[in-house]
Image (tube, one colour):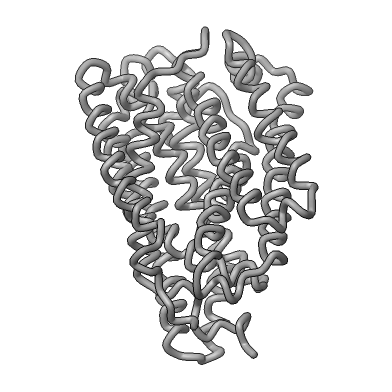
Length: 386
């Protein structure tokens, strides 16, 4: 039973085909938009990239957390998470447009701007193009190495019930979580926080990490619900497992809200002129509407809904809540990034959704392709013993 793979008539095959077709068309439209407005193209692309790479990278810490803690919830979700992590090399390739568009995104890449700005001069030893590219290469090298190691040992576990493999996965995940936390903290500073280089926050990296984990879990739950109707998950997954998914989702929503509130309270209590402009840009000019939407629908509403035990035990209802959170996760990334380019008034360009749809269609195509490549349940996993 554990050796069963995705059936040829499963709806995810249609998702893969449609995703590729829609993604190519959307990216082609964005490519046409680049001709008329390259600045807007790279801004929209950056938002879309940070959103989808957040799902891919967020699968990595959840996978490692499961190897450390164990539990049926992670065993039935493992192939989904592994497939997500195996799209990280794709995200490394899709990072190239950001490399080519750095001059359109980051003011610290302009020598004339740095020459007239004392703060940028003091940060120039860190914020410079060669070091930025070297760090990005290091981040992807670490993420891909950790991903490859975990997937290789997991594949070996399918063929061999050697308990040593489980111990390797456990201890590698401990080290991997530390590496992920360090690299993602620096990556969030490089790719997002440096859009406004006069501002800084010591909790910004943690906020990004919390958002990535929440995005990955919110994406994984609807996929698990789709897989739960057929063998082999139909014989294994139960309402108790989906209740565990719901508890985790609720927990990560609260964690995200805690990080976001902590950053706001620290900035508000300090009331320093070098810190408050970041929030002033996001609470004025119409951006306050987005802030209210995030408070109500990214935190308060799902928090209240997920208090229901019956809802958490219902795969379809839980999947709907998770799918809604995925949309709100994009809104959150949009709110974090776009005001850096449009502080005076809220802006929404047609390339914003198209870039997200384009990258998303391409990502889903590769994700489903990876999911088809292995049995849907891990073989020889201790969770299925007996």
